[in-house]
Image (cartoon, rainbow, N blue to C red; front, side, top):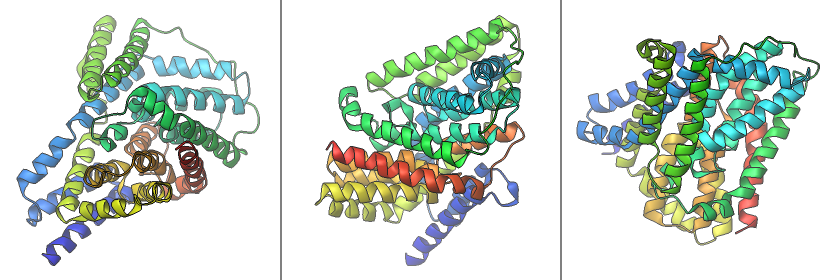
Length: 416
């Protein structure tokens, strides 16, 4: 029994390390799936348990499918190029103003479409804007990555991890705002100030504003309408306390087909360009979490949460901080799954649950593979010929995340 537990932990640790470090520059999905396969191969978990774990992620898979189809539709039909030219024109020659516009757009996108949408939908447009404005794209791209997490608890729909942590039963919207409005503002403002300071040299000087803006095509207009309609749909679905995955997938498929029909293009070619590897990556992570659960790790976490609940204020500060850093060791999606299961067992006070949500949402700004949104962001910038290494991201994240986390947790505890 002890040997099996050790082997399970070792495989899960090695698989997670592979996702983070990407040895041989192999995609993250290969390492997550390899870890899941080894667990099955060595008989450390039955196939039925693995299939059950994969099934738990169905809502997440559907959500990602919808968002990726929306993104690729917008890209194919020129919406990103039009947004990029508009941003460069509105910056009026100021690189700092362009950065602020990107950050503000990231807040809106994350709030109403989710952090994954910011990574998948906004990042390509931001890269194009930087190129058109003839500035270093990295500060703009960092803004996309960090605001995707910093603004991901403004609304329940702003991050799929929110649904995971609350077990699919979200608090009423009024109660949500009462808990997270001030912490969200704190996280967003502190993250902006840190980014603006750490990237100050790259943001100095002027940028090009006399860029050519090609009129938006019919397909581009339809793609924009599809994205707006999806945002409205998600707000309605969230208000009704329903799962977001299926409506998002339906909206993505419908938008792709409708826009392709209007533009008289094949939707098959468009779908072929989607980064589908993210789906097996997520499935593999779900299997790894299930394996850890079978070794008793989650029961131990639940016991620790119960102990912290004796002093809710101290417990909130400590649990939120620990989960924030743990999210970078195992990605915030599995970390959120572990925390969700532990919370269901421990039944801690609301303050501790809220602090855990802040930790799982904001903590991933520390490292490059802390969240699924950041992995999607990485895939998006690699498609544009850019890449950001672990240490380059950590250099920024090590300043931004702890300061924003401290501000957000302090704000939540203050209003308790």
